[in-house]
Structure formats: C-alpha cells, structure tokens
Image (cartoon, rainbow, N blue to C red):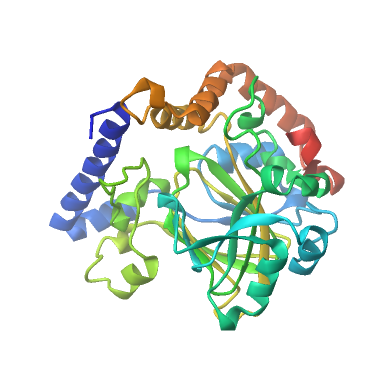
Length: 369
C-alpha cells in the first residue's frame, strides 16, 4: 500500500498507543499512580431549568466533559415518538437495519445488514425471541425519513453546529439528527466517533446504558489499527471480554470511565474522541424498546481537530483522482469559516439566551439546518 499522509497518521497513532501501553505495562504501579493523579472524569447531571447555554458550552462541550441534562422538553411531535407511532406514520419507508445485534461503528462493520421497512423492523423487534436481533442504528432523518424533520427539534445547547453554517453543502450537511431504535440485547460496541465529533443523544423511549472513557485514555483499551482496512480511529476488543479477563487486559483499570443510564426525557453529551459502548435497555431483562435521536456536531472546541481528520480522510487514496469528495467538501467548508467571528457570535447568542425557559430549550429543525 502506497504511503500517504493518511497512512502516516494511522501509523503514528498506532505507534503512540503502543508506546504508552508498553511503558505502563513495564511498571503498572507507577502508571496507576499517574492516572490517579489526573483530573477526574465524571458525568454531571443537570436540570435544564438551571443550566445556561453558556455554561453548557463553556464548562462541558469545550472541556470535553460528559453531561446528562434532564427536563429538556419536547424534541418531537408527538412526544415521544414510539415504535408504534413510527410504524403507523412511516411504516413503508425503508432503511438499512443491523440484524446482528451489535454495531461496530469504529470500523463501519455490522454483524449483518438488511434493508427493510419500518414495519418489518417493528415486527422483527416484537418477535425478538424468534430470530436475529434488529437494530436501527444512526439512520439519518433528513436523508432517509425527511418528513419526520417537520416534527423534530434540536436541543438549544447544541444548535450552534458549525457543520450547518458552511457556505456550501457537504457530506455531513444533512446527516443528522439520526434515529436509533432497538430492543434490549442490541448494542453498539466500544468505538470512537470519526473526526473527533462531539455527540448528543436524546432518549425518547426506553433506556440506554452508556460506558464512556476519557478521550485521552484510549491507549488503555487495547486499541488496534488493522492494516487491511486502516482507519484513523482504532478498533477495540469487546468491553465485556476485557472486563471478564482483567489479567489479559491489565490496562483497562487505568482508563478513566463513567457509566451512565440514559432514560426517557434525558439528554446526553458525549465529548469528541471519547471511546464509548452503548447497550439498549435499563437492564438485560428490560422489555421496553429504546427509541432515541442523536447528532454529531462541531464548534470552536473541536473544529481544528475535525478539519484535520477530514482533510486526511479526503486524501486517503494515493491517487488524487480518488479523493473522497464528501470529506473534501466538508473540510473545505470548515476551512472557509471565520473561527474567531463564529466563536464570538456563539458566545453572544449563548449569553443572550441565558438559562432557557421551557419553550426555548429546543430549536425547530428548520431553524437549525
């Protein structure tokens, strides 16, 4: 495979992770002392009635800290969207559904994918004991179910997405918000979202159990960068496997982590670059179906890192004629932005909003996109 800046960066990240892991394994006690001395990694729980937009963006988004927000208000019409409602209103629409039960997002692989209607998805979920699990994962509402966008809003805390403020459309202009629908037993495996994108998820029905690791501690999670399909973000062993075999994965205990259950009516912020694993259901016996909406976003805190990774992705192939045009358009759009002016504008608008009232906690999709 020809050397490219993309491959050089993949190799650099792999070498850095291996170097840090090797040093820690040589003296685990010293490594643990270093990790313990680092700033704590926690997920605060805040109510929207006392959380200002400025505080959310400055103290959590910009500092790459997880946050759970309660009382966000109605993000969908009706509130909430249920599987039965989705089946009634868009049952004949088709989407790619994971039928293997586990989405391995870091490598863009799934145990199996089928294109099926929402009605078929609902039937598969309702008959979960009779076949393979079905999980609608990260289904773009603007692209796949655009009619639902008229019934959709975005949390005001994260409505400043710079991906929506570029002069021209690009690969991610209409990717989000996306829809997630799955029964207990379905999950996404441990992964990192691409190009350091921050992420929010609003739980509409049911629950999800989240495990989030500090963005700087991915090296503790036995990351690998397979040479046959090199990607900027690593793949990881199963978190269940690592937890069950601490002797084989001694560095896992060094990684700073938070475990959070996201319930209906709650909103979660996951910082860019943070490895995370998600399981649907309050428990392994939870009969409820999980329905959620989510989006990745970029602002002044992660724009430079996102643009750098997108630039590498655009030039992944050695031959210029094989440029990834979608990624190239996205990085070109971000590069055109005046980061200083946009950051100042975000700060002014956040200060003007203050602590949003109930009606001001959401922004209609039409005003966001």
